[in-house]
Image (tube, rainbow, N blue to C red; front, top):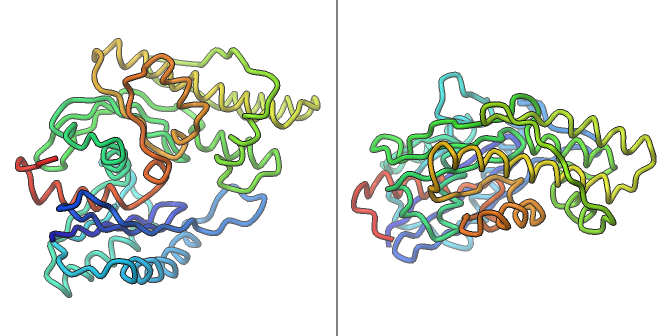
Length: 318
C-alpha cells in the first residue's frame, strides 16, 4: 500500500509521520524540544542540537509501530513559509535526513514550507483535503505566525498562498507564552493557560487593534503585566489574554470575509487548539473548520500528505 513519509523540524517540535494513502491514515511521532523553566525559547543552535538527537529516536519509534515498506515519497519542511528570505537553521535537520533517505533508497524527494504542512494537516484532520482544489481562507496562528492567508490551487506548490493579514508586532503564540511564563507556567504555555482561563470569574470585552486587516498584539503583554502588578487573579489574567486573541482573530476573519467573500474558513496552528478561542470564532462562523489538537500543533502529518498530493496531482481522490 503506498506510503508517504514526512519530516518537520520546527523551532519547538521534532516530528515525523507516514501517510498511508490507501487507508487515508496518518501515523506520527513528535516530541517538544526541551526548554528550561522560566525561559521563553531556544537559540537556533540549541534547537538544531536537540532535533539532531531526537529525530532518529522518533523515526525508530515510528518504525516499531509501522514498518515502512512501500515509501513513494519522502518530504521535509525546509522553511517557515514559501516566501523570499524565509529561513531558520532548525529545518536543515529534517531536510538533511530526507535528502539522505532519498539518495539511499531512490525514493522521490519533495520539500515544502512549515506553513503549508500546517494547512494540509488541518485539512486532513477536518476531512477536507479536497479543498486544495478550491479557494479558501486559512489562518496559521502559532508562536511564529498570526497570519490570515488566501489559499488557491497551485500545480507547483499544491497551494498558492497570499498573505491577507498578519501581526505587525507580537505573534499570538508569543503573547500566550509571555503571559504564561509571567504567571509561572511552563513553556510552551498554551494548554496550562487555557486550564487557568476556564476557572476565571470574569470575561472581558476587548477592542482588537486592526489596521488594513493586520493586527497588533503587543498590548496584550503590557496589559497582563499591569493586571499582575495590581494583584489580579492569575485565572482572570489568563482569560483576558485569550479573550483578546480570540477577538483579534475574529476581527481579522471579518476583514478577510469582507474582501474575499464567504469562502471556506480553516484554522490551523497551535493557538487554534484553544477551546475558548475556537468557541468564540464558531459562535460567528459555525461552518469554520479546525484541526484536532494533535494536528493543530506542529507536526509532520501535513508534510507527508504534501508528498502524496505532489505525487497524485489532479488525480487526487478523497
